[in-house]
Length: 133
Image (cartoon, rainbow, N blue to C red):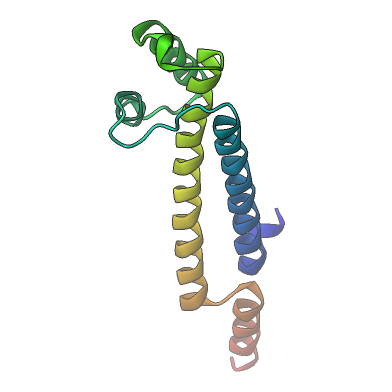
């Protein structure tokens, strides 16, 4: 609600969300690293499949994990339950997509702010217009 009146506050909230996602990304990367498990690279089959599916909700995410568990041998995972590695890697891809989306939102909102100003500036402009008739 507050963001509706302040572009500056909205930009701050977007940046807080983005920073939180970056912190979460580091946690998932640490999990994989601590368990000596691989992060999917862009040439990984599971990476490509996940991106191609354009997962958009929890049910699709779960379906992907179930399909990946049965389609790919767990022997490629060394020390950790296979499902945990799948979930961690898939979550990293979701975090990446969300971070990219927030970056675009921030860039767009900043551009609108530069073009139109913030709420206070618009109100001052309207007050001047009203005074000047």
